[in-house]
Image 1 (tube, rainbow, N blue to C red):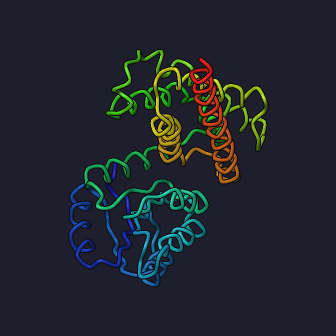
Image 2 (cartoon, one colour):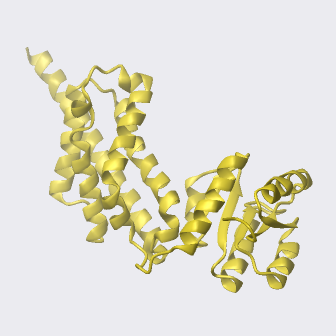
Image 3 (cartoon, one colour):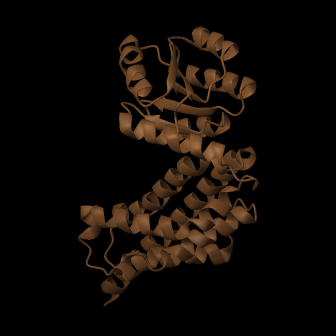
Amino acid sequence: MPAGKRILFVDDEASIRLTLPPVLEKEGFQVHVAGSVAEALVEINSYQFDVLLTDLNIGEEGDGFLVVSAMRHLQPNCVNLILTGYPAFETALQAIHNQVDDYLVKPADVESLIKTMQEKLATRDSQPTAGPKKLSAILRENSSEITRQMLQAMKRDRKIASVPLSDEERIGHLPELLNALIELLERERDEPSAAELRLAGEHGKRRKKQGYSIPTMLKDFHFLHQPVYDLIQSKLMGMDVTGLVSDLKRLEKNLHAMLEKSLEVYAKDKRSARSTAIRG
């Protein structure tokens, strides 16, 4: 499949400019190399590319997005990939703003990099005519997978796994919380309703009875957060990016409000138990 596919590789590190292109060429790609934004712009204006693979920081922080922006403007069908040594929420947001198809963490595994490029090219070449999907639709379609990943993350965490619970006790009620967050996105609501806050409060009460500490309960929300952003990264190419940043902010705000309510009820339940013990 890569035969004849042309890559523009942009990185200011001379060593990687020497070592990576031969590996990609062995896989059948034609590789052009640039060591600066200026060199990259010359290449973009001179040749047609199938893939842009650029470091995030070329000379100056965030320069990779300038190259992506130019490629998007001049060659809108090109697959755009960012390499970053500093994965963060802010980087993901910038990638969304700039309509990057994917971002990979340095040092990138070469096999994984090649597989990603091949998959993105295959997706581009066989892209269905269906329109891009909103974040709420992506989350709803993948809610079972998000829940599964949450459970696996909980089982890998030593402190949480040490709390003796069945899978159903540990995660059985969490799909309802996830569904509430999705509905808030669908209705474009920036604040949870009383019913949705009640769900969050029940979560706090449940975790208190199950013997969770506050730090372990906080991890519940982290374990929801992580697969959601992993999903966004993997589905970015087919998403409606026009409202994605506002949807992400709405999701973060509602998630934070529900976390606060869970902690409030957890702490209140703890104080009530202490008061009863004192009166007794």
